[in-house]
Image (cartoon, rainbow, N blue to C red; front, side):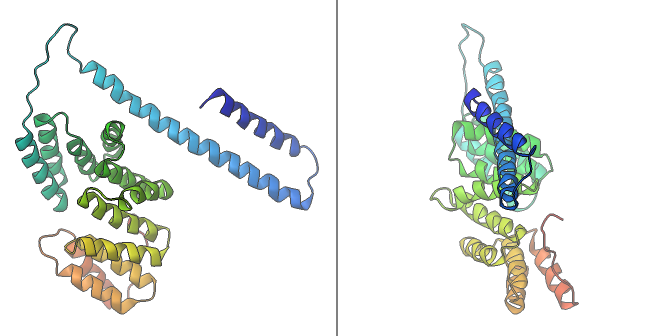
Length: 279
């Protein structure tokens, strides 16, 4: 936060504080209320940005500590083929919801190729799914410092924000990946999670459109069919919702197939699907 910006916030605070010491006209009350809310939101958003940036500086410290001693000659061996193999195994484990195994493969890929950005980005995914969001966040921020357009890291950052209930920030990160050409898998998952975020906001039409796009990009995305069905159900399209769940229940080799079957059974018994994916 620059001194000039802080000074402008202080001036606005003083203006509002002075206004509250005198009688307010009916129309003026609304203006003052709106200004207070705006000031709070501006400062809160800035604090969030500063805190995130502060945490990212830790990676500079870690990077400096990892430098070889002065005068030493560093010898680093890169095994790109082995790293690629480990990374693909990590992807397979992530798709199969084998989070601990995915973490191990991603760490192995990082050891084989220390310059990789995809390996620590996927490690962030694996840690996130093990409820280790703070660790995941550090890896993702480290990647984005080196490669601000890394789709995998930005998707993970969006999902972490979504899990924390910061839906607006999550949508910003996910939209940035879903709307640009790049890594096909990053785009697929950005589109899927963006649809989930819209569902959390109860914007069911937009959610259905995004989730339909996600299962078009990835027909075997069983979790996509499950959430597409939820979006359609809340839009009143119950038959189409059941069709989506039936399709999802027929996907092979996915740990999320059961979600579709559960939703089919629940609604067949007169129940209602959960509105939120997290509560």
